[in-house]
Length: 206
Image (tube, rainbow, N blue to C red; front, side, top):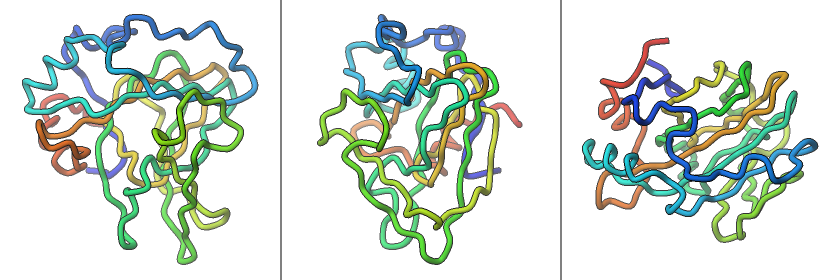
């Protein structure tokens, strides 16, 4: 078992190429020079997603769309200011769908003794439609991390965004939909070890 990423095989209705979005607007902007992210309104997601989560006693917390240009990268980061609490990482779950971007990789990092997290309103060099109060990314101080685990980003996966991680695209641009979930009525991100148990019937060994 690892603490970073597992490929998922979900019910067929959720495995289609655009399984959750009524209109994701992948074309209108020129994303060719930078990476891009936005928080999504709950209304863009298909209700079949919510029915499936409900069957697992889970609820949808938040969702976003991310884009990395060809041969580009989404900087090493942690998804939440709360993810590094009192010197320890808080491992939690997201479900990611990769749209296109064959050859894209996700990489996680160990921290060095001088590790420090730097909260960001928006990631540098990115284009974002997020308002600052919706963005919780933190960047590690330069030179305070080292890579420890890397995997080709599956088309669908359970992913731990609570540790420092980055995304690198291959020769094709990388579109990604990412949602955070919680135990129903808890309003807190699903912890990683709990998620492994809940999604055990959907995890594909890799």
